[in-house]
Image 1 (tube, rainbow, N blue to C red):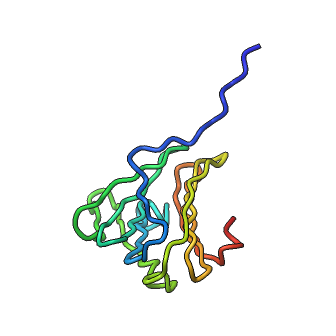
Image 2 (image 1 turned 180 degrees about the horizontal axis):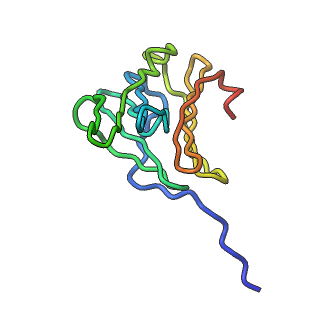
Image 3 (image 1 turned 45 degrees about the vertical axis):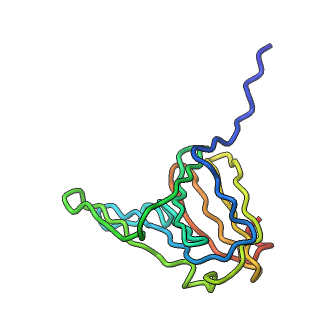
Amino acid sequence: MIHPAEPTLEINGIPPKLAGKICEGLICEQFICSGESVASANVTYLRFDGIWYRLYFEFQLVFWRVFDGEPKPWEVAEKTWAYPHTNVGEMFGILGQRLLSYEMLLTPKGSKVIFIFANNQSVLIEDADDCSSFRVDDSEVVR
């Protein structure tokens, strides 16, 4: 009898070593199509040690990239697509906080990355059915 392989989380790029560093930026790029929000965290930008990192997903696949420059909202007007930014770090008091750890996990519908900060807040970036979203909670709630 052939047993199907257990699904595994794939990672494209090199996950940065961020534990112990101070968060200088955390921005989620939303995706809006024809005026309707499709994803609240289509792309997530994180800044540590003066370097921006770009985090995004496909099904059970996490992408990490270094990002040059400053993230900026953008749009494709002829397709009615917009990519506004939410400054999650500023909104939730995460800027200036030390990142204790982060982990990347496989889920039945995709994957997620959980960031745990020294102020007992967690940021969950989750891709489910190719739709990425963010949530900020107390560290104990997110897990």
